[in-house]
Image (cartoon, rainbow, N blue to C red; front, top):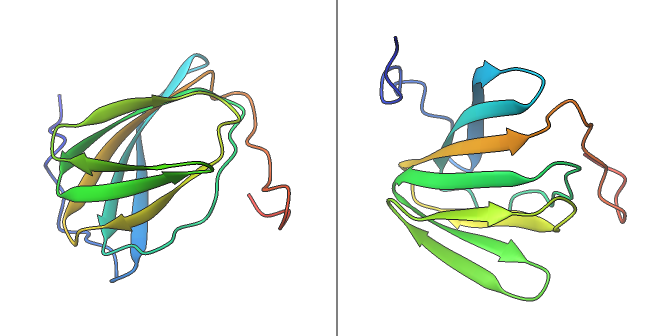
Length: 115
């Protein structure tokens, strides 16, 4: 057994995020993400569905046609290939992200060719 709030001392540098895979098999990958005042993160278009919950702090996600504000406890589903990014976070944002079918690889951003 473990605790999601354990080992939160690894707070990332301001403007960055730390990712930790806490469980993975061929059907799901669960990541704990710590964000520290992230501003305009990279764009993602993932080949897998994703469900995220913000456990601490607040954040704003940006999609191609709208933004979504999140507070502690808010969660949402992001369908595969839905272009999105983290627009900004508080200094104490903690996420739990569930990636469905993680054996599929992420696709690069069509504009920059970056993952």
